[in-house]
Every structure is written in structure tokens, then in C-alpha cells.
Length: 137
Image (tube, rainbow, N blue to C red; front, side):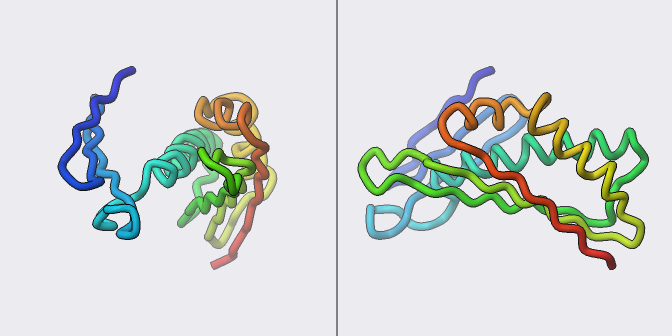
């Protein structure tokens, strides 16, 4: 696995991987233009994407896909530099008429405990709290 990240001026960077690219920027108070997520936000997005892809794949096999799903990832940071992450909260939100709570819980658990490499990596740095919200249509 390899990513090449190119400086585009100011605090803007373009990260290019095998399947595409993502832009990263910072807030204006440190010289950024606020035109993309920060590197730390990209870590949270990577966690959401990794576990989300697992959950969709597992629920598809179980024939239990929701009508809609999103994943909210929040993190706390240490107040001292380099301000590492101190905790993560991952909130899976599902919408649909016939949500199967047991299958959803199993899919989320399998992703977190067995399949998501980003989750496994980040959990070595800080605890990850998993929450599930079921929202009938």
C-alpha cells in the first residue's frame, strides 16, 4: 500500500492513492484555506470508511441492508502537542422500516473486532467506543 502526498501551496496537500485522491487543508488561523478536511479529520474519515465498508458488506450477505446509514466519528485530543488522540467514539446510525437489530449489532461487532484494520490500528493508540442508533423510517 502506498500514498503519495503532494504539497499544493499554503497548507493544501493532495494525497493520491491507487484508486483516487483526497485533498487536505487546515484552518485559516494556521495558514490554511479550509478547503478540505485536516489530516486528523482524514484519520476519522478513514475509520468511518473502513468500518462502514465492512458493515455494508456483512449486512449485504445477511440480506439486511438498511435504507440509509451514516457513521459519525468523534475524537478527543490531548491538550499538549503533538495533541494525540485520547479517545474515539463511532456512532453508526441506521434508517429503515425493517431494521434487524441483531444482524446490525453482529455486523458492527465483526467489523470492529475482526475486519477493520483502521479500527485495530487506532485502538492501539486510544479506546474506541461503539454506539448504534436505529431509526425506523
